[in-house]
Length: 158
Image 1 (cartoon, rainbow, N blue to C red):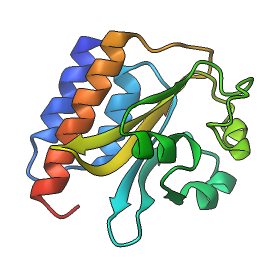
Image 2 (image 1 turned 90 degrees about the vertical axis):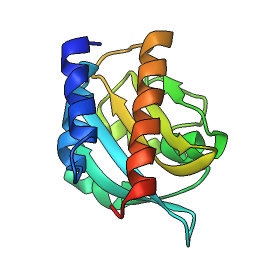
Image 3 (image 1 turned 60 degrees about the horizontal axis):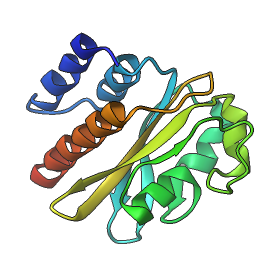
């Protein structure tokens, strides 16, 4: 995690209108990742809807555009309301990641719920092309970013 790169995340979160794609790119850069997604919760349907993405092959976009709570890493992070991490997505047999997730070619990955005051607003995830276990410090920072993202979603209409 590059603290100087992470400062740019909070700068973006303090802008009048957040550019979610640019924010995702900064998060990916801060944590030295290559791939990521941001999903917002549609309260009416309890479906996570894709808002921003980077490094996702085009043929996978229809599969990740809407994710039910409890399905895949993002859906399970939303259901559990806690980060879900996989050291190597390519060899994982836990059943947490959906089979199509392997087609991203990433390995070390994490999905983080965006929660504020107990309310779920969505999830975001990042991944590296190598096996990786995120540190407690990194998970804490990602969770803090998720809280700030939730604060934006609560106070504005994305």
